Amino acid sequence: MTSKLLRGRTLSFLRWPEAIDDHTAWRCEEDGGLLIDGGKIVAVGPYAEVAKRAGAGVETIDHRPHLILPGFIDAHVHFPQMQVIASYGAELLDWLNKYTFPEETKFRNAQHGRRIARLFLDEMLRHGTTTVAAYCSVHKSSAEAFFAESHDRNMLNIAGKVMMDRNAPDGVLDTPQTGYDDSKALIAEWHGKGRQLYAITPRFAITSSPEQMEMAGALCREHPDLHMQTHLSENHAEIVFTQELYPWSRDYTDIYEHYGLLGRKSLFGHCIHLSEREADALSQSGSVAVFCPTSNLFLGSGLFDYQRYRRREKPLRIAAATDVGGGTNYSMLRTLDEGYKVIALNGEKLNPFQSFWQLTRGNAEALSVADKVGTLDEGTDADIVVLDAHATPAMRLRMETVETLAEELFLLQTLGDDRAVREVYVAGRPAKSAIAA
View 1 (cartoon, rainbow, N blue to C red):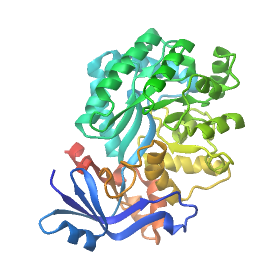
View 2: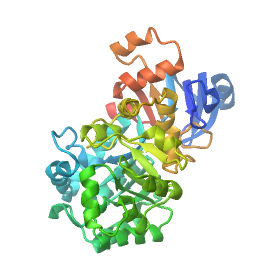
View 3: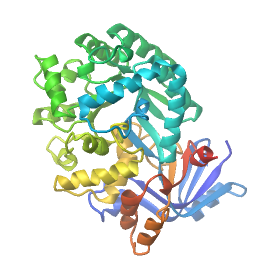
View 4: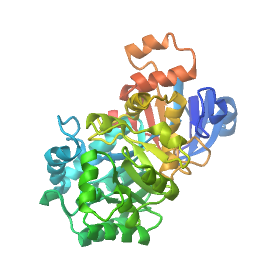
């Protein structure tokens, strides 16, 4: 791969921005340069300095006046639910039974899985998302399709075959043994192949028997470097049903704790209705609570208390995610727009630097991949998004009065979508323009 030099307004984060004027939390160059070679960022800084280091003859791509940031990261998404998004009128459990499980049954057909995997990753890249933590269906072939498509694009993605052996139609059930065996085979084939990472994926305690939960725990013990992803405390009816199925448990989190599923690479979708004991257990284990604002609003599940979870004496590690198809948009910009409103309803505010930290470095840290993606640091993978705050007539009009970077970021977060994404680079290769072509 030949070297290339990107020129534009570069922005990346060093840590959580405590306030809107916490300038030491981020690095911004009004005329910045990124030198990419071999899929890695090899130099970053003022354009004149980076250009001098690049030398003559290096291809230069001028993205001025647009912003160049690390590619967005989505910490919880269901790729088989592309044809479930925008399904009317149900809360979580009814929604799963009426729409989701019948749709996921289609993934028995490997060709269907390949088609949806291709369209799904197209959609992610179109919206500026370069890394996801994805749930596949229960079918081994769905995970094979996802990983094959991801590997062909050289994306860094985390995914796993869902394990579920009860409380769902036969077409989306495995058994404790087949769930274990299929997961083991997929781990052997795909984990660490190129940039692919495997996540052990019991859907949630309602659809996994105690025997299957034991198998999920065994997989975590056998592969301690892997991620684990599941759902927790999304909906009141879900919580009640879960504790009926596991009557010995102190609470919902205690079930996952009992089977050894908590840890620094454990991703728990939703976490809306946690008791203080549950929040302490997640905090002490380093587990990650994943904020899914559009899904939580759409299904009427509740309001994730983002700022309180961050501030509590035992704070939670937090990621943010679309949760398509319960979530209503593939865009992480739209997701944080809704997240801002959820946080506002809890009487707090999320400033735009905090939002963009969360979409990039924050999610990378939560997914334990910040050494590879989520920053513009030298030596990391060149997964990059280029954002245009003048992308639509409404945005152009508003930009006439924008005076600061904070205002521009908030405009992108509030009015931006896939149209604001001018280009996406995956390991240094242009990806969005390749899809459009």
